[in-house]
Length: 153
Image (cartoon, rainbow, N blue to C red; front, side):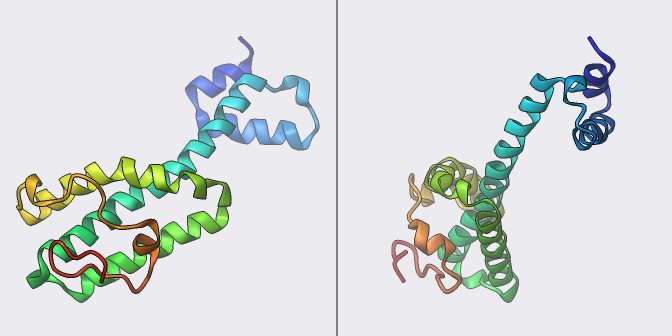
């Protein structure tokens, strides 16, 4: 195992700086290509994970908005707006993540229901088993679901 591979295992930050320096110096033979490939693949996964994490929060807030209308506030509206902005920013910066959005919504929804249930103290059974909002609604700055059972407004 060379020193760079050892650095990769023990000090990621130092490894990244050293690998970047080697690339800039065109010293490709000194790089551990497997470590570099692993990190590049991981970066793509992080982009998708960022969108999924924001979707959990956004979906939970949409559910709370719909199922606890008495508690609606400017703060909730602000959170919905912020999560939408951040998701759209991620999709602009990494357009190749967009095809995974539908899958990310499906994956994020159970966690969103759990979060909404815990924050509202409503039973999990109060929420639909599948996401009631379309991709377009989720990302629409002007979409705020109304009373329970009517997510089209």
